[in-house]
Picture 1 (tube, helix red, strand yellow):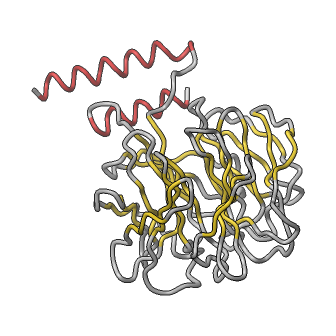
Picture 2: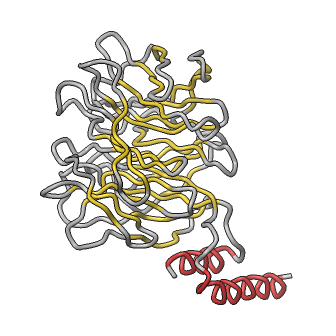
Length: 322
């Protein structure tokens, strides 16, 4: 039923079903108390409402979209952390605590959910990526490549299914393929703020040093091919923009950035140069996250009748406009 509700919102916000949905969250640190939802937008910037969290105190660390059409959240907790399906309401405990640094990340591909506790310097030593199936069964861990590596962020390559990690280092940072063991140096340092992010799509790897306020001024997104060759940089939109997170849109191949601001955050399309304000402040904690995904998947059979009504309303409205 939640899938149908989202489809209805998409229909009446634009007059037709949108190609992609952008989801952001303000919260992947403990500095903001209380519950915070995921905020949804279409690619034109129209608000599609919010999803979650499951209670009045949950703090979302990160969000990820599954090929099933479900949107998952990594949520911190007192006794341990939870992966929560914002679409269906199902959840499972991870047995892993990400509350110490408030910088956990989640990535999903091929029926596997991957989380990491580490994208800051608050936890010393090496930390692996923890793997689960959709039912919450542990599938073990991957990496890191040594006993001191600190993973900043993780991302699946949708073309190969390989899981990549952005890892900080003393002389410069490394993109590491946790599936194959291959790696390359980026020539970019992300250790100063411990908040680097990675996104992968269309044969490109994109990283950023910045999702906190620890680095002043503007910072671009750095692009590489899968062999580690530099493809230059993109953005940011101004000389003071601080990028919180980055994500490729699988429908269009455009690269989006979540940029903080004094009063509100902005979604900036780094490929096209367009942007829109979110009305949601992300500068207060500097840990906002961004997810971009295709139109929601096929709803449950019991919801098909309502979906047909929604589609009929869309087409009727389109004919009246013509």
